[in-house]
Image 1: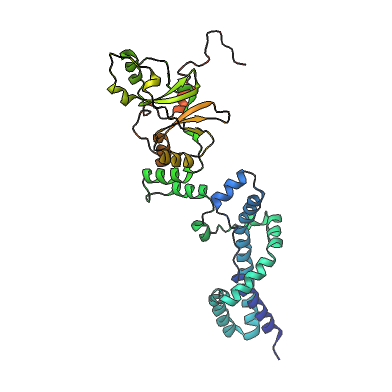
Image 2: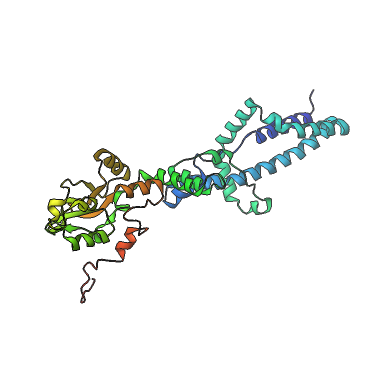
Amino acid sequence: MVSSPVVLWCLIVLLMLICAGFKPRYSMISRYEKNRRVALGDSEAQEASRHDSLIGRILSLQRLILALLLIISVALSVAAFGWWLGIIISVVVAAEYPVVAHLRGLRKFSQRFYDRYEQPILRYVERFAGLFKYLGTVEPIDEDELRRLDSREDLQHLIDQSVGILTLEEKKLIVHGLSFGDRLVNSIMTPRSIIDSISKTEFLGPLMLDELHKTGHSRLPVFDGDIDHIIGVLHLQSLLALDIKRSVTAEKAMEPQVFYIREDQTLQHALAAFLRTHHHLFIVVNQFRETVGLLTLEDVMEALLGRQIIDEFDAHDDLRVVALRNVHANNHPENRQDV
């Protein structure tokens, strides 16, 4: 007949194997993506963050329970098998139980057991948080999380954090390429307030040509009445062939074909349009067909590559900042009052 200490010892060893065989699993969201969604008020991400923050306490509790079970198993082993044999068996158990616990069949059983009771365990460790101040908290490394990417922003964060792998230019190229499809035309266009344009009735005499070249632009929109009625594009390079003795109007020298693009279109759409039309300048309009800016092929390529291309706009790093300076003194009379 099997003695009671032997039965108890077997039960304790079995509990040790079950306790050592499970591994608390993190939520299927990487840390960066989880924090980003929490900041946006995502309830699912908030619950995942709560769950993951308690993993360290569960591991601490697991470690404490295993230590207590091992002590009990030693005592029962000595009681059941005597001092010398009991100590030898205890040493073997202490050395081998982690290996046995991770055998495939036993590990699957242990994991199912833990998953079934995970929520009560989480509530317990959350309720008795003060206890873990004395026990300490294990800070585990989630290896799966280090290899997991859950969003484009997550990949961008990983690229930003990489050191010694990518050069600064390579980082810029990748990050700008990832965000390129989501950016809108109005984020990079030349704003309406600093557009240099010319009326269709202007005569292109020597003085006017000199003024046009001083703008530093190679193309200027030509308007009829006001900038909301653009009827063509004047290419300054083509003006070099003009006979300066015979002044012609901008309307006669311009290219009459004009391409318009909505300000809420994506840069990906804009690039496709540039390639399709073989044009270098688009007039940006809003939903009311009012002119709100200009977009050039160079602007789009700079947004894609993340670097500045030497062109007619290279005097300024950010034309939107220039527009805020109100360089053309738009609606700026002496007795103005903003309300």
